[in-house]
Image (cartoon, rainbow, N blue to C red; front, side):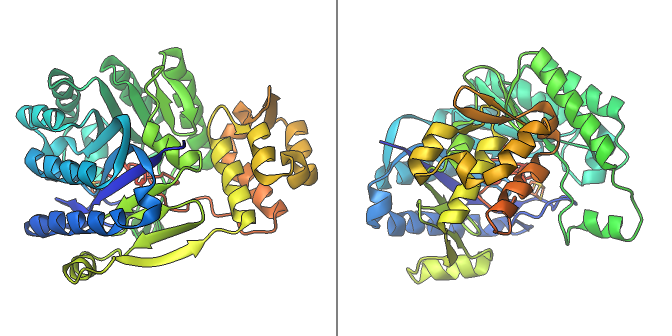
Length: 413
Ligand code: SF4
């Protein structure tokens, strides 16, 4: 029986980072107790729905925002309610995104005791000037200490989130970030190419000409180096932006990429039930008011057409290094991948961007560099406007720091 993923969005941050477009609020931590109460009520409402009652959840992901602003007993309280409300598979992966500027050694040990078994640290850079330019609240030393403290607290599964191709960043300085990361021996590294999101302070500065983004050629050089360097040191690239030691791939993220159902709780969280994607109000006041009145905080929904599902299966499959499972695709859509995308696949193969291995179709190294372009061509063939960055909670390019990219995936936390 397929399993599902549970995402819990904690939208509170001490301060907004210049590049971030996640739904977060700063300076209102006094609302946290009300928020936890609302989350518990939302769980009760969703648990009463037959679809979610029938699911077996295999992962829980606390993303943000900054979930590490919650005290360990608050995390334990939310987890207790989740376990009492839904059915779970054995040994679920339970991730907490943490900001190195908000954690102590004792706090980490108590998160571990509360049941968190994977820690995703929003590191972003290990250079003080880069962290300052991003408006991060932590120092390089706090980032390093966070990894060391997490290990001492009993976390075996630790992710470090990084962003590369920052304005003014040289390849040498990015190489230095990665070299330090490798020394710290996390089990997982997420490395996101900086996305300049419309309306963020970073985008405004770039628009005004106050800072210059790196060129596409420079970005590719950073990405190439990242893949070569991390693979050489034993972190396998299993998705465009994600690298893991064998056996430590993020099970939660994989759920987003393989088309599993996921339930997102909290302000702005997104969900998918196999037929439609729906999302909560991205407004703390409205979220709290809805649940205070025992109303579901859902804001809107988008039913997925067959064409959209086909495109997402192709796009999310190609982002994974193993590629699209052609046999599973043909079984699910009753048409082969080649037939569905007519001549485009052959053209992309001839152009050296796609390759077949067994019954998988994968991006080549060159294709990886041009992933969005390849996916756009596939979408165009389906005559749909391809959406390469639909939200699935922490999905980079999907979102990322989402931390751990994960529905928020990437550039958050
Ligand atoms: S990047 Fe992370 S810490 Fe910064 S504002 Fe966004 S969610 Fe908060």
